[in-house]
Image 1 (cartoon, rainbow, N blue to C red):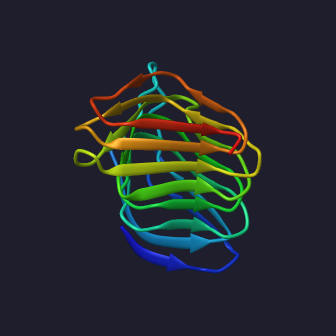
Image 2 (image 1 turned 90 degrees about the vertical axis):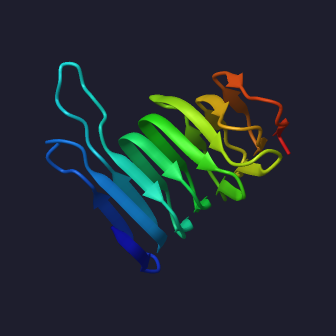
Image 3 (image 1 turned 45 degrees about the vertical axis):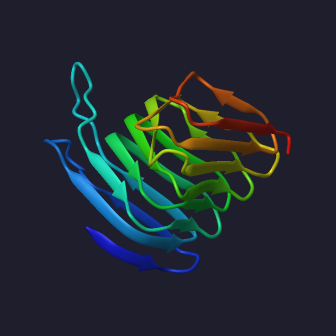
Length: 178
């Protein structure tokens, strides 16, 4: 577990399970670095199985370059993410994103789709999660589900690609080329 990191423009790399020998858990508070790369691991298979859990309880903020979060059965985003360039949350069975937060790039593609099974919006009825892609780049989202009836707003200065949406009575708002 990492309570917080504030390292300016340096690169923060964390491998939660570097030998793929079982289930590992990484829990993170506020993270600030130039580039952020947080990874779990998968067993070699066959079949390949994602088995780690990565939980982010504080703001994740890359100040210079990309933020990458990958290779986990479950990724829990309980606070906001701001990536200076691209944001990739990839190779995950489920990404749970809590309402009351913003997940955003300042200048680059926002990808929560590549090898992601489900993007699940968690939060109470009528609460809001905002996903905001900037820099004339695409926002790519996996199949969107929810646990109650929260609202989701997706903004992109480029394109938006969502695999599918199966939400309750919450509102989905998509703004393209905003």
